[in-house]
Image 1 (cartoon, rainbow, N blue to C red):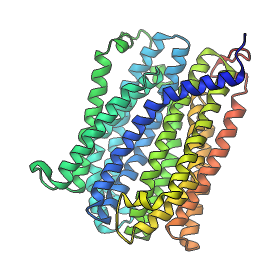
Image 2 (cartoon, helix red, strand yellow; image 1 turned 120 degrees about the vertical axis):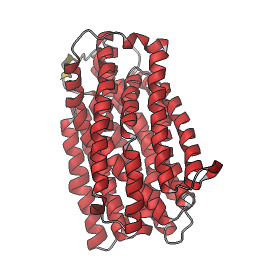
Image 3 (cartoon, helix red, strand yellow; image 1 turned 90 degrees about the vertical axis):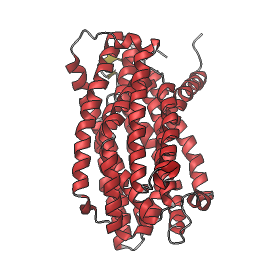
Length: 457
């Protein structure tokens, strides 16, 4: 007997949650590294937390191009796995290794170049000095970070999502310990302050890359994928770059909007920038849960593409969107009702705290839009649809979000809150357009060169 539609959706929900929760935990672990650094340097004053915040904003602005490019590996591996194509999985592993190292090297050079012209961001002198030192050190962590991300994308695509989760959590523990030791000079170490936070990031990312590589080399589960790939690796690299680079720019346009908003907040003052970074770091925690759900959605849609089942594609995509709406509604409620308590975890400065609490209310309002847009990007990536979503993100954030935020802030006098109203508008536009794009595209007969069956479930 053919299973009922409701039963199929319930089954898909269970599979997606089981697949996504290790990804979500790993994503949260990554963000908690920044949160921990912000909390620890926050005890040193507004300039310290502002410098780490803007340093991380600029770092992520560059690094997301590589992260987005490598993220396309997950649905590609899932699609190959759905076709039971072991040979292509081997080739994609080799692609992950080579592309991550090259990408990391290129991005390191870009970041060091930005350090040399950091004055163009027009921050206060003390913030410029501290942030420049911090960014210099963290720039050298980019190759190990990209290497870890490449291998993580491969294991996630095979649905072995707990591997990266465990390594990330141990990396978080190491990062917190190193921050405690180096920022404050504990256990006989010198007091390094913001510089110590940068060293902690570097050491932690090296550990995570080495741990991931050693595990994949020694685990019997992954041994079969390290066997010699008999085909040419160049077509696979070309495919991943062709599909992944637009994905990287999708992340770039979104993160660039938030990084640009940090720069604008710094133009208003150090207190406003510190408040902005507090609100951003909390919103980033919620976003990473949504991003983990999006990654699981892209894997499930990719597997459905490999099987050639259009109903399964629509079902997996819909479940990813529904989960995003449900979770982000809860974070909206939390941010709106507990904004004072959440901001107080970071700082007690009377010039920063009231601003941060008001920004958290706006962050709460845009939670659902943020979750839906990242889920839609993930499931569209699994359909190899990258060019139109890239245009959508450019339009939403840089035609709507940033210009509107600038106008509200500096022309109408809304202050730093105006920047966040612009972000709210950009995220809402992105969520609406990308969701509509998925439902239009998923109903086409031919996707990704595979004949999509109307009958398979």
